[in-house]
Each structure stands twice: as structure tokens, then as C-alpha cells.
View 1 (cartoon, rainbow, N blue to C red):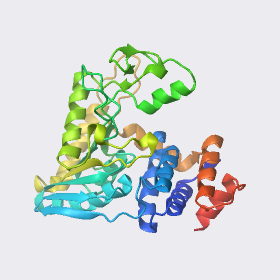
View 2: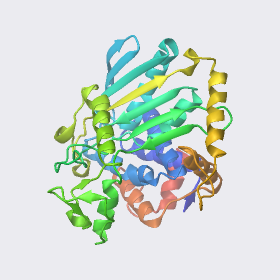
View 3: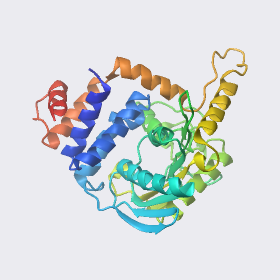
View 4: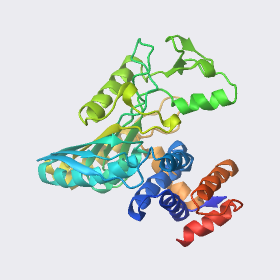
Length: 355
């Protein structure tokens, strides 16, 4: 079934509300989930909401957190997110950090007792609309070993950096520090397939192509990705007073995560008039786009450009929800009492969009 952008927003909002979240928080979380699917980041879209709903159901994700500001020191902020939705928490911290950045030119906010923040690029898009440079990073449950090590001590620890432009798409870098998500390896294991070389090591730190023997994913760029993952841990968890390493709850066991994140905002207007900065950023984009492509390459892309174009395309065509995902969503919606046990996805959509 193909659904529109607004239909998916209504669906995700209804599902989060059925899971116990407030209407305002459900709207925030649903918007980010929808953004993920419509930019082609399907791993953080409707396929991920099923995990969030299970977390809400068993209580490892707090549906109605009492989020508190624990530090307000000029341009520096810190928050206790009370194990609420990481998506909602980052958006709320972003709002507060933006106010400080307008005043001081730069501001930093951290969050403890956090959870999965969803599609990081969304916060980059938000920042671009606000004409600010933004850096967001968070630590995650462990799936990666230190470079040269064998123990799971690091998460895939994503980092987002975004820059506003004047006429074109914003530059939005959204990358994890691992070469591949552990979920991809699990998908191979379910099908009994071997994984490509360079994806993972076994429990003793030896390279493996056996999906069922994979224990740790490998960092991007070997020691470079490892170093980035360490620094994300420090910025988000050590600085934010959150859990790291083996103290992080395991998502696959529906444990409370207690992860951390950091939001850093720079207001370019404190350096120069914002229109001059954005024109300069546009000039930089054009320099890259107009440079000679390598043999066999049709076009050079800037960070976030492909997702921007995908968003425009999918807004026109709609997003297709596969049968298996639709069935899983119906099952969860039934568990929360949003629909009856035998209702189909069409019924779920009708109820969700009527709210």
C-alpha cells in the first residue's frame, strides 16, 4: 500500500499515542520517523517504529518522561531525559540550545538517560531551516570493539554535521562510525548467508564471513573510525554523564538504554551577515558540483543531496508499505487497542488518519 507524507505522519502519531506518548511528543516522533522513510533512510522509518513500540509496551522506553534541565550555565546546557524517546529528547534540547546559540553564537547541550535518536539527518535539516550550523552525536548500544581489540565496548555512534545554504539543499552529513549496521549482519544470519569480508570479526577478534559467528562490526577507515567512535562516546556520554560501554542497556533485549547525546549549534550570523555566509556556502557547493567527475561517474554529490532529492521524489509518489511491515504494524496496533485483532492495514490507516 502506498501512503502519502501526511498519512504516514498521522499513522506514526497515532501509533505513538497508542503506546502512551502525549499528542505533542507523538507528533514530534512521528515526524522524524516519516522523514526517514521519505528520504530513503528506511532503517529508521516505519521498520524502526516497531522496536520503539515494543520498548514503550515493556516500559524500557518511558512514554511520559519527566525531562529536567540539570544545568544552565550561559551557553552550556545539560538535561536528564528520564529514558523518554530519544527522538523527542533531542528535538527539545535542540530548541533550548538554539536559543542560547542566538545569544552567544555557539551553544552546547547534552542529554543523559537517553535512547535511540532516530534519523540524525532530520536534526540537520531542522538546523538548516534555522540558518545555523549544527553537530549532533550520540552513543549507542555496543556492537564494535576498540581497534585491535575483541570486546564489544563501542556503539556505531553516529555523528551529524549540517550547514545551511541559500538556494540549494543543505549540506547534511549523517554517518555512523561503523562500516555496517549490526542489523544487516543479523539479516544475513536469518537467511543463512555469509557476509562480505571486512564487515565483522568473531568473538576472538578474527575476521569472519560467517554471519552467525559475527560478534563485532568493524569501524569505518579502521583506526580512524575507531577514533571517531571514541570521541562520540566522550562528547555524548562522558560529557553528558550518560552510560557507555557495557553499562548501556541492550536494545534487542528491550532493556533501558541510558545512552547520551550532544547537540552543538553555531550561529554563523555572529561571524558575518547570514546571507553572505549562505552565498559562500552555495559557492562551495557549486565548486564541488562543477568539478570533473571520474571516468564512469555521471555526477558528484554533496552530503545529504541524494536524500534531499529522494525526499522530493517520494513526496510526489508516496511511500510503499510492504505486506510484512503492514502486518507487523497491525499486530502492534492491535496490542495497544488501536484496532481489533482481525483488522487490516487499510482499517488501521482509516482510524489513524481520522484522529
